[in-house]
Length: 186
Length: 186
Image 1 (cartoon, rainbow over the protein chains, first blue to last red):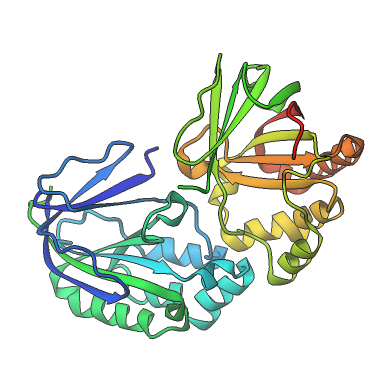
Image 2: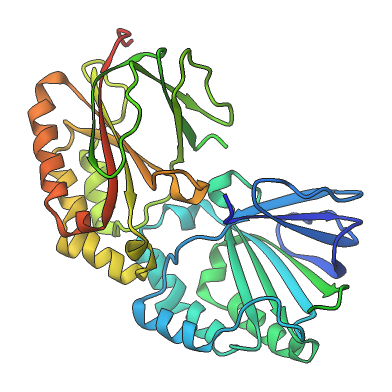
């Protein structure tokens, strides 16, 4: 299952935690480093306090036109200058999950402009979404954002706009983990 | 993870295989019985030849109006008279998964009437959908159908209508496993 990713919070890994805070709901134990694994094997990490798992999947809300625009604008993870990262685990309420597909789509995009907001920060803020709810995880989604340090203010604005949206009425747990890459990239 | 289900094909289990056939793509090894497990543990079964896993999840295409109608009409699994079952593992093509949400919804319902067709056979034909693709499984979906033996012709008609739909152009592997319950139900 190569679409599966693990984020292990502990004392080891190439990403140093520079800040951790709960925005809504329960805290997550503060750790020093994060190790990331891809595949079936949970990566070993010294002093591991927690492991979060998720999988990448097909798009759930974006239309053909939105995907075309995203593909034209976005860049991948791992850019040499993208040494800042933020991991945001969120959980949505039971009320959200009981909604039908058209009701969720209407809140997600027509009301909250989730995709459109993210688009405003491309290509600077790259991201990868991991789905966790179907794995019985404590969070529903893990979003990994990666950007050059000078784009940190842009990231903060992106996050503030999403949190101010109607969609965020359905977020009942959210933690923000700020990170700095320790290894120089190729 | 209590939304996870295992179907183990072998020589043990409460469901006796009365027929197995590949409709599209590669066959699945013919077995005598099927054992079903729910949770993290793969159930042990004598002479197991294969194990298929999937999870139940939120609806991916149905609108609020469709869900309301489904809830009003459908009945659960495990009805005493529902001693016939069919397990249909299917895989959809890469082309399907590259489509956007609106494009998949349009083929699924506006063109192929998937939900509407299923609705025509409620409450007689009960079903439970399991998602497998995100687990890296050989199939994308496992659908379990359960009904009283006298509704077998209705089931055949339901299946023929789905297979004749535009959506089925995107099905590249499908196996049908017919089953009879061996244990009298409470």
